[in-house]
Image (tube, rainbow, N blue to C red):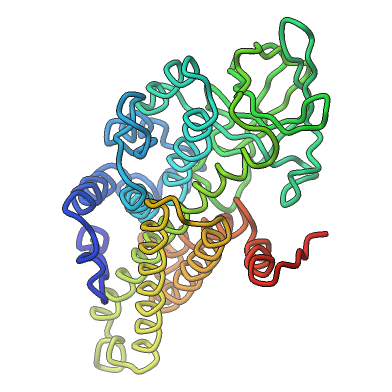
Length: 392
């Protein structure tokens, strides 16, 4: 009931900064989330199941690679549109946004940016439609925040590359048809390879028993003497610049996405507080409830303006990785705090699946860690403003 009556908060009239196309895109995704995600997501989360039937629908509504040119299956939209799509998907659930974010920013983006024309035409249209699912392999069991020390390696065997190593905490791994994998060549240089399901020696065991992102398909990528055709190498980039540029795109999407989760929590708490009676009046009439709601709306408004400005900078190709880090860190923490505060407004009802707070809260515990931890993003900002690295 609360979701059906959802009203997107816009205290500073940010909608006036959006074009008609932005609003049209947002409206289409919002309607789809209301129809296809909200009714089923609690059960999927409770059952630890990824709603795979939504993948083709995500492709049909243009949620995969929306900024990829139409000739490769995308919609050719701008970065603000991409952000708004991520916002509406995460209002539904972080797992749905994660799936679309990985597909778009971590799989389609590097193929489009660094791939050959043949690779673009072979993979991008199928990824855009949802006929093919992708994964991104960077994080390893012993190297998360320090990817430069990755152990995955490949050697040139003449007719093919021989890949060995393992990646973990990989969204879409158990269901992915292809994986963009980052590994070191014989010179120690990080390169990107497109590894296809079915290649001998490649397995992708699922990670279960998660308390967070339970309706997301998470797993490992394990490579045991996998023969990768040489035409599957991404030729357009060498070094960590490749995977880090992908992460910048994904982190940008997260900075928008988590606003959707925060909005969902805030709107639910606001509606509930007006209807829940205690001591003869709605709890919305009490000072401490109003304090919570006012602070939530203030933080959402700040995050909206931060994300919008970052989107404009992205459109102009002027956004720096450090600026993206600031937005990712700030907005995820904002959303997690609001999920917790809004749960308190609902009291015991807030822990049930009838309301979204606990689900968003547990999901955001992962989002605040993946694609750059909360502390790492703080140090990225520190490095940027001081010129001194705290990493080494």
